[in-house]
Image (cartoon, rainbow, N blue to C red; front, side, top):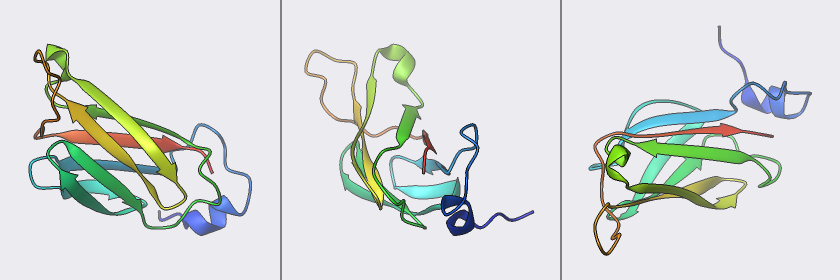
Length: 112
């Protein structure tokens, strides 16, 4: 069953439904699977912009991201929220916490 996000955004969306999600390869920025994500822009090492297929009416949503090797203490940050997308940055577990690519990056968005 396919659900049209623009119809949902203009009606009441139950808060427990994700309005966008993505699983992508952080080395290449290639999307493996997604919902309401049109593309990933690889801005630089460990820094990506997630672009929505259907823009949100405002930037007041929650985005949570994770990456494959964060168990080593790496930090994954979601920021720069806009109606058309947001930025994910992954910082390495080293003395400098420099940005780094991960093979698996996932994000989920709740809100309208």
